[in-house]
Every structure is written in structure tokens, then in C-alpha cells.
Image (cartoon, rainbow, N blue to C red; front, side, top):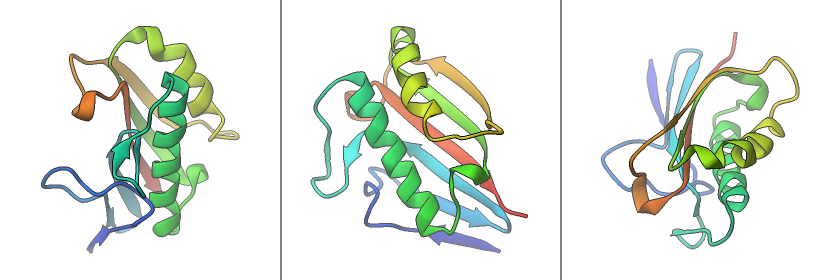
Length: 126
């Protein structure tokens, strides 16, 4: 069973994709950037501010689906520059209490809307 997840507390998709898809016990959250849902605009501020907004967007999609950060098993972090690694890592780590998910972090040439960070997650519930 595949179910499309939508939340008005997360940014509207800016392309032909869903915010998240639930397939059985798995939840696949599309990459989130620092768009403020109520304004549909990128947040202005530091890389830490961007990361906080990204994690809020992810959290809202997890909650909408009945999941939490405790259910996240895999994350992917895309950075515009590896110089942002430490700041993003500080914000990211505050969302997880224990049993950290598997993860990779990569620097890319560009991200949508000139974002500096994009994060996607996969969650699982038994």
C-alpha cells in the first residue's frame, strides 16, 4: 500500500513530487530545504537558521504521518559547501536523542532556490 502524505505545515512541492510517501511501515520524506511554509519563501539567515527550518519541515511531515525522529532510520544531507558541515551537524544532532540513523553527507554543486542545505529522511515503524 502506498499513501501520499501532505501537510500544510511543510513547504509545497516545487516540482512533480510528493512531500512524503508512506509505503507499508516505511515513510520516505522528500528532501526539505529552508522554505517557511506560511510564506512559501526561503528563510533568511545563517546556515544554522536554514538547518533549523529544514528540521522543522521534516518534523512536521513526520508528525503528519504518525512518525517521529525516533523512527528515522536513514538520512541524506546535501550541502552547498562542506564548510557548513559543523553548523548543520549541530542542529541536526539536536533532533535525535539516541540510536542515530544511518546517514551520508555530501556537497553538491547547487540546490533548489540556492539553499545551502537539503535533508531527506526515511523512517520505519514496526
